[in-house]
Image 1 (tube, rainbow, N blue to C red):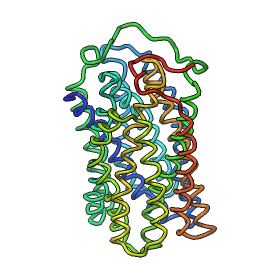
Image 2 (cartoon, rainbow, N blue to C red):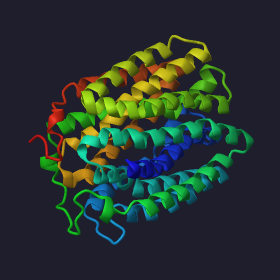
Image 3 (cartoon, one colour):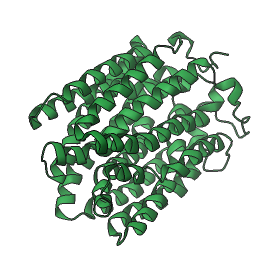
Length: 395
C-alpha cells in the first residue's frame, strides 16, 4: 500500500490539472466566444487527437521494455511537456494561441495518463485493487479540492497563479513517483519479454462492451456537468467566477472522504453493486438540483453527489481490468480513457447546445438522463467477483 500511496502523486497531478482546466479555461474562452455550445466544443476539440493516442499508448506501454520499465518512459516524457504547456495557458493573447496551448497540453497529458494508471494493477494483486484504486482516487480528490478551493483563491489574486503552481506540482509528482517506484522490482510477474498484442476480438467480450457503454454514459453526465458548472453557477445562481468554481470543491470533498471506504466496500460486497448504488444516488441528486434556489442547498447536494460518484468511479477501473487478462492492463486502461474521452468530446457541446436552446436549467436534467442510460448498461454486465484472480474472463 505504501507504493500505491506514492503512485497516488501521479494521479494527484492529473486530477488537479483537469480540475483547474475544467473550472477556469471556460472563462478564458468566454472572453472570445459568445455561444455556450461553441465553448463546450472548444473545451473538447483537443481530445479528438488524444482519443486515438491514449489507447495506442496504453497498448504500446504493455509491450515496452526499457531499463526504466514499461510505463515510466511515458511519464518521463509526458509530464514535463504537460507542465510547460499548462503553465502557458493563462498567458494567451488570442483565441488561436489559447487553443494551441490547450491542444499541446492535452496531447502531453495523453502521453502519460494511461501508463500512470496502468501502474496500479501492475504493482497490486487483484484482491487489493479496489482498495488501491480508492487510495489513488483519494489523492486525485485531494487534488480536485485544492484546485477548486486554493486554486479559486489564487485565481482571484492572479489568473495565472494556479496554473503556475500546478505546473510546479507536475515536476514534484514525477520526482516522487520516479524515485520510489521501480517497475522491475515492484511490478507483479514483471518480465523482460514483450507481451502479445491486444486481441480486441477476444478481449472485447459481452461484459466488457456493456461496461464500456455504462462508463461512456456516466462520464457524459459527470464531464458535461463539470465542464459547464462554473458557467451555470454564474448565470443561474449569480455567483462570482471564483465562488462558482469553489462550489465544485464540495463535490470533490465527499469524493475524497468516500474514496477509500468505497474501495473497501467494493472489495467486500462487489464492485458492480457499489456502482449501481452510485448511479441511482447521482440520478436522484441531479433531479433534486433542479428544484433548489439556495446556494447552501446546492452545496449540500454536491456533498452527497461526491459520495455517490466515489461509489462509481472507485470501482469502475478495477472492474474493467477484471474483465480481461493480466497482459492487457495497459490496453484496457487505454480503452477506459478512450470511452471517457468520447464522453468528454460529446457531452460539453451537447449540453452546451441544450443550454443555448432551453437555458441553464436543463443542465442537471441532461445529467440525470445520462445516468439512467448508464444504469441500463451496467445492469447487463454479467460478472462474478469470485473470478477476479488475474484470469481472463468471459468469451
